[in-house]
Image (cartoon, rainbow, N blue to C red; front, top):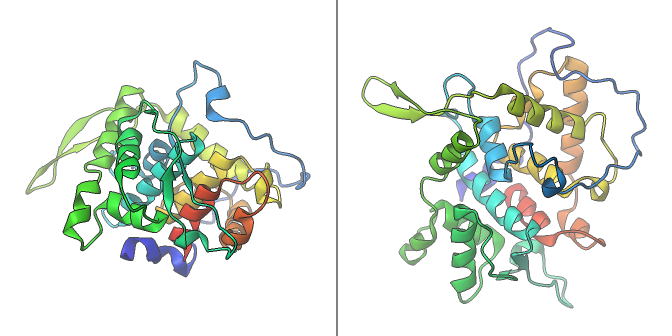
Length: 289
């Protein structure tokens, strides 16, 4: 489908502003080989607002004051479905089948339910139920298309997850990150979700920036899996630019260079290394093919 292949042309570059040292600028004099601790989201301070990958991607895409994503962004819908598959994998609910003796590629391997226990998140549990009940099993790319509703097969439309952005926005409202308003756009009224807690979004942006600057490691397997997934999916959803825009020109160029290094990896080869999450690489491969 179109939404899975649009990002192959590379990273969209921001406009040069000539403004140096903006918020998010960093000092690059650091040890690139310093280890990065792979801390799971659940190990954070219990008082800290925890966001799912889906919510983080949507938050990066939401305009702070307007409370909606860009009308020109047609990538974020499929990107959010990729988040769902990776989130389920990180929670131990789904996995891709083994490569086998013939070493089948990630895009040719099927998704299987590993543990049907509900996650407690409505969207994740809805997707998990579809995967568990589907026979024969489908590939990662097929699931991204089915969950997005981007299929010509009418029998597969039942798998579409509807109103995903609105449901995620409501989650952000419940967590105190956004609020709900009604805005009039001449011919229609639209529910919007302006930002009310800028600290949480700034922390998210800083986290993304640091991952490719002060905390950068040349080995992707030493990066936090959630963080690496966030970078890839933010790129696939066309919202990564929003996190890098505040950087100085030098830091911006360095960040983009390192993201490009990640995008140029051999995903099949990376998925075969010890301690990896094959589902994560399979989702990344689906958006990068």
